[in-house]
Image 1: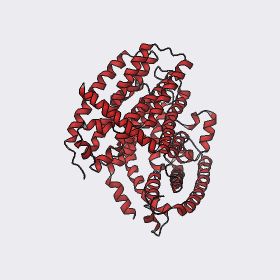
Image 2: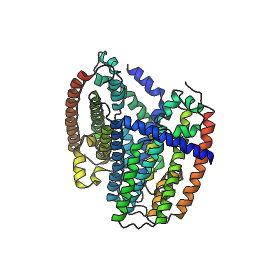
Image 3: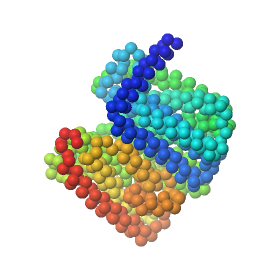
Image 4: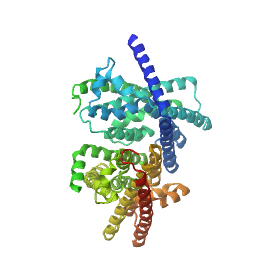
Amino acid sequence: MKNIKRYLRIYRAILKINLVYLLTYRANFINNIVSALGWGAFQIVWIVLLTGKRGTAFGWTQDDMIFLTLGYFMVLGIFHFIFTRNFDTFSRIVDRGELDAILLKPIDSQFHSTMRIVNYANLVRAIVGIVLIIIWSSLKHYHMSPIDIVFFCIYVGVGVMTMYSIWLIFVTMIIWYPNLSNMVDLLFTINGFARYPVEMVRNSGKIALYIFIPLLLSISAPIKILIHKNATQDIITLTLICIGLFMFSRWLWKWALRYYTSAS
Amino acid sequence: MSALYFERTFEYRLRSFLWILIPMSNNLTLILFWSGSAGLDYVTTYYILMTIGGLFTTSHVEYEVAEVDIKQGELVNSLTKPISYYWINFLGELPYRVLQAIYATILIGIFVLFFHGNLSVVLKPIYIPLVLIIFMLGYFISFTYKLSIAYLSFWFKDLRGFYELMMIFSIIFSGAVMPLEWYPSTIRTLSQMSLFAYSGYYPIIALMKPFVLFDFLSIIFFQCIWLGVLLLLHNYLWKNGIKEFTAVGQ
């Protein structure tokens, strides 16, 4: 408990430091907001175009699919707000031997490597996402009870943790191959899978594609709670996957650090 | 010089392979999305060719030019060489095309195996030279366009927002979402005339539609017009932009 309080205090300090950085480079912040909202809007245009032609897909109506995309818009906003920038810089940090400085600090190296940079522009994206979800649900008459909303919030958290674990597993590989700076670009693209219903992979009959199910569930499961689709099985699966992936990513991180050779 | 570029490219083969996985995984999701709908063979072929065609026709020269050459002042090295900056960059990109052609060949094999060989290509062998010209012009359009927008860094410090906006336009208008003829009418008309379509979409469609000679020639004609416009823009931006260059930074 004492440890949790200590890390919460450290994270509050990190938020303050990043806020000072934001206020110093305001034009950069606005640029980032334009970029974050632009990509978010693009996801919506993308799904509107696709569903405009296809209509209902995998048991999801066009309205449901747009709801799913808005969920993606919001959850990715939260994920990018807390984590992405850190993963983005990881290749450079390992390649130049800057990880030494992180390892020498008296705090957990995984915490410091993956949570020290905050991207406030994506917080704006997350907030816009929440507003759009509220607007869309009232326009299309999706009724949500307070319990639905509480469960939705909990499973958004579980979804974000699942994504975090997946990204960490991939990014840890950079300790062995520091030149793979485009690993994060690949992860951005793979994240795009989460825009689609989980049934898309389940119905494909291609077992090789089941590796994408954790990502698909991380958005589909919380959205299913809100739109009252049968979510029980998905929620249980997502919970188990999240715990398993988080433990594995933590173990992999610690194991990989043994092979870190500092600069060069 | 070309040999040096080749050496640099082939040194980071795994990195290059990851770049290919990006469009591949994107198009894989789209193939899955259309599974179960009518005309799956057509869609599968379309996205497979989009993945492979994109490797040939899409240039990625902008980051190196804008961030490294212009912002960090590396351009001075190129200015002292007795060859135009346009062709220096063209030579620099060439090894990537060769490496990606090798990967593309492997990908075609995997795709055909994975989707049981249902590729519906209707191109007559007699038209192959014309399709090659269309692909080549498609690449030149992409290359000249990317180089031109990179030159904007002569005037502006941070263009990330603009680049990403242009990337969104290019994804939509080049038919990366779905075939352009499936778009709603207004977007369809706009995108079919855009330079992005002549760079990325028409080379693919030339392989898939039962085109006659006139269709191929008309695509080549409009590609030449776009390329001409882009070259004029490129020359204008280069001539004026280079006056802003201060050798160290902007």
